[in-house]
Structure formats: structure tokens, C-alpha cells
Image 1 (cartoon, one colour):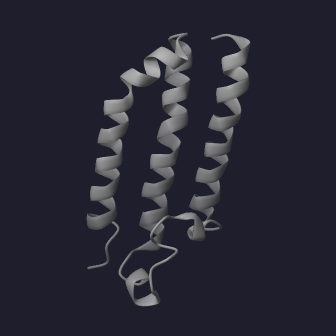
Image 2 (cartoon, helix red, strand yellow):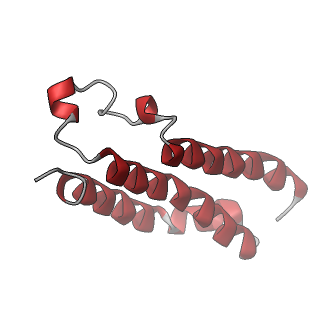
Length: 104
């Protein structure tokens, strides 16, 4: 990994880790897409603590991919290889939001 890639991807990864921390602490509920625009009745249908965990895990997955790609020393080429994995993680996250995070 050369210096230019480090200067580009490291700040992005650090910002995503900080964003996940903010969401986990409960300070960023307004940043969760769909939840912030839902009515109070709709928001009451979700367990917010579980929703925070799922959203933060999905956010933390991207810096993890960046770290793995950095270990392979080809961050731009291997990122395209991770696209199907990222798509699977997003689908799993959506399924978790509508099953595990829903109040029964």
C-alpha cells in the first residue's frame, strides 16, 4: 500500500469507526436512514438498541474490508473482489433489521 492510498483510505476508515461509535452510544439515532424520518408510531415498532448494533456492525464492516485490502497490498484492485461480500452483508443487515430489531 503506497502513501497516497494510505492518505485516502485511512481517514475514511477512521471516520467510519467514529460514526459507528456515535451510533452505538445513542448519539446518532438521527443518522440512521429511514428511522429518522419515520413517525413516532413507526419508530416504536423497532428495538432501538438492537437497531444501533446492526447499523454499527454494517458500518464497521467497510473499514474491516479496507484493512483486509491493505494487508493484500492492492486496495483498489481487491476492493472490487469484495463487492459481492459487501452486497451479502447489506442483505443480511436488512433481514436483521426487519426480524431481530422488530419488537414483537
